[in-house]
Amino acid sequence: MTSTVHVHDQATTLGNGSGSGGGQVAGPAEPIGPDAFAVQIADQIESFTVAVVEVAKGGDPDAAVPHLLLQVSQLLLAGGRLGAHEDIVPEERYEPDTGPEPDMDELRERLAHMLAPVDVYSEVFDPYVPRSTPVPSRISDDIADIVTDLRHGMAHYRAGRVSEALWWWQFSYLSNWGPTAGATLRALQSLVAHVRLDTPLAELDGLDTDSEAAEAEEGVLERQAGRVMAAEIAAPLGLRPQPRD
Image (tube, rainbow, N blue to C red; front, top):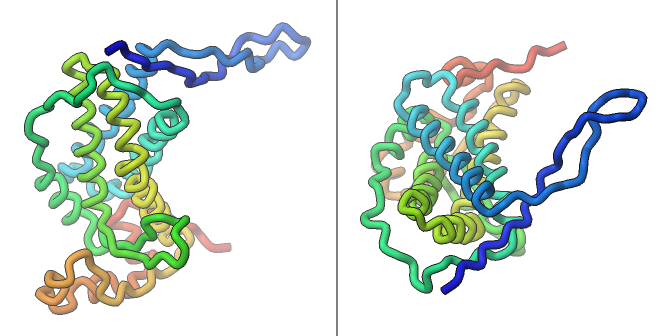
């Protein structure tokens, strides 16, 4: 089966202006080739996974939230390019086996420990579903799930199956890791905003992703997360509240 990977990703180029100002002016957008597009997407994905693993090691816990905010934002740029791209069709009719999926439990647990007590947040899965009910989610679960999707495609990429990797990253962006990353970004941005604007976090009222675990913890989660002032969580999360006039 012949590959039908077509790239229409446009990059605006800047050239030296020849006008009186002598400044730079935007030249015509030039399409990039499929090889360059694949390399750029793979580089952005690899950069994200490496950075997240480093954050989870806990070497600089004070900067965990700002670093995750930055990394998820940059990853969504790659996702936006994949989403705006026309449908990518892989060379193989059936997806080749990539072997066992990597175990994300350690990454998940390290992030959960580092982000407590702000790991749990609420989200609406699909904003276009009328009267959607918010559901509890965890930043640590979300990031581990995103990395799982990205590494699955990376296994194809490293095996030389470039079109298969691009297809998987595009498909999973639209169906799973894109919405998950968007929700995670919203939670991280909201957390930063609470800190920088010096506003309190609302009580979570026992919100958890596992009701049995919540009962077993006998309310520990809500006591930890209830009405945490921004000034109190700023230092351990590596953030500073916005100074008031």
